[in-house]
Every structure is written in C-alpha cells, then in structure tokens.
Image (cartoon, rainbow over all chains, first blue to last red; front, side, top):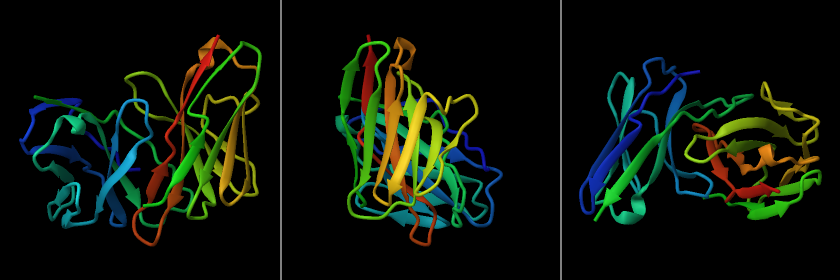
Length: 112
Length: 117
C-alpha cells in the first residue's frame, strides 16, 4: 500500500492557480493516482485520476512525472468555493480486496 | 459520474436507541461498499467493507456488534448503530466502488451526521 504525503494546508487568493503536490515514493507499477475533494459536512467527490504524464478535465489537471513518485493537482483560477480538503490516494488497477485508506489531506483555504 | 445516495442526512437520537443509515448506488451496481467515520477536522476513517451477499469485514477496533452492516443487494448497504451512545456521535459516510478497468474510483454518499443525546 503506497503511502502518500501532502501538505497539511495551503492558502491562496481568488483567481490564482493552485498546485498541490503529493509524494508517493512507493507507488507500484499498476497503481493509479486519484484525487478527491471534500467540503465540510459532505462526502468526498472524485476529481481526477491519472497514471502518467498529464490528465486534464473540466475541473483540474494532474501532472505526473516519469518516475511517478509524485503528482501535482493543479486548480486553475480558484474561487472561494474551492475552499475544501483535497486528498491524494494511490490505488491499484486490480482492486480485488483493496481498501481505500485516506490520509490527512490538504486543507486549501481560498481568500478574497 | 456514478451517484450514491445516503439517507438520512442527519439524525438525532436518544442514548440507547438504534439508528439505521442507508446507502444506495443509483445508477450502477456495487458489489462492494465502504463505510467511513469522520470526526471534525479529521480525515475519513474506514470502519468496514461491505460485500454483497456476505459478511462485512471490519477494521481493527471497530465493534461489529455495535455497527451492524447489511449488504443485501447490489445497490443497497445499510449501517445500523445499535444502542447508540454520545461517543458514537459522528459523521458517517458510505461509498461505492466503480472500477471500470482503470484505477479504482470511489463515489461517496453525502454523509449522515449522527448526534446522540
């Protein structure tokens, strides 16, 4: 089970790009990198998933270097509503009996 | 994405009573669902894995007789907090797995805030 390390908290201002980096030095060959977002008193929401290089969707981009030992979630032009906790997880493709364990996450606070 | 419905959103009960929380996958079949517990400003803590048609697998330290899990169909799992006490007050969240051939993706319910008086 690949352990992940990410900053406990980050502050930003509206309109800025926010990059949250996650370290996962022990990532396995068949592991994917997945990010979730959680607002207070709500369940987490899937944001993006990637295996290598770059993935982009309507919400965010995910950059993964060639060694895959880290990944960066990029949120373009954040707004106040992006204030949330962001979790980075490493999950295998062959889930089988895999249990998703959440780390502490990164608390992003967007200021006006 | 897939939709998971969790009900109720919040519940207040007296100490000693039991509370049932439902988790439904609305547009996909979920052979596996997970139940989490979350305290304020903390991360999600996995309580148990619910498998359709079989007994749930509980994490270490979670009392299976207190937190009863039933996964009778491919779209419904329930968590019953039996003889609830104030220390059981917490935010409970369910999730369902949607693999689809790539890395696992989990889709979460909106959570249930339980307050035991």
